[in-house]
Length: 317
Image (cartoon, rainbow, N blue to C red):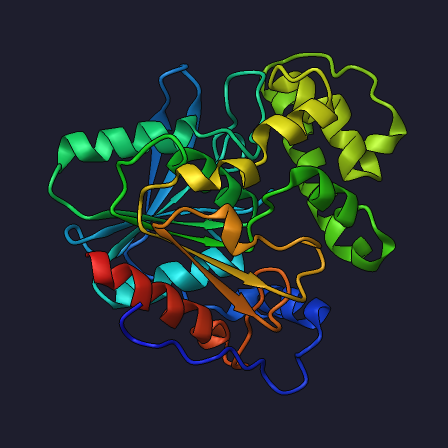
């Protein structure tokens, strides 16, 4: 990048990765939202539906945002960055994964790390509407996995940023089941159970009897729910097929990957040798998993992350 980015320095007392991960959620209710929020239900080419939430003006560069597992437009990392971009005069659009928005998805599918159809259809639609508008994307965690899987085969975006990417899904699922991140894991499993319950209620189907282990293990949930819903033979096949790590060399779009060395979920960081020439890698010593809390004030607590994303994307606007 032409302008050097300052090293990330965690806020006083928040150096520990767990504190970095949880502090944005503590402040979430205080993070300002933009008055230009707009909602849209979007139909995919497979006749499923997803929800889009737009922020900012009617014109200008567009940044598509892909949230993490069980995330949504009101997740603190999405809400804060959309506000930041809207203040810069850019449009931001959160693409909700299947079933994660207000509208339940129609098909018996779940979102997963390589479900790129939503991004593909939205990008094609926006290009058809305004082919000269700069179109960029930011992916967080599992949404970043979707983004990098997309970039490995599609070259339609102007630029992209991936943040805390689970490039080896199997190792991340195992890390999520470790007692050290039990609180974070339980929050994710609660969101997954809510999605599952709502799906059967919306489709007026009798929910099959699943083993109790899906309530206590990400790996079990993937084995019994994620894999069969998406035509994988097992969780192992899902992890191997959907992981983006082995596909990074194929990315041709200018891309920045940001990851923290103390991320408790990503035990094996992405290495420079895995990347294409169009991809830059930025390591920080701390930051946790999508933490990067550099200040205490709610709307600015991830200001280092916002400044870094902005400094990269504006080079291509």
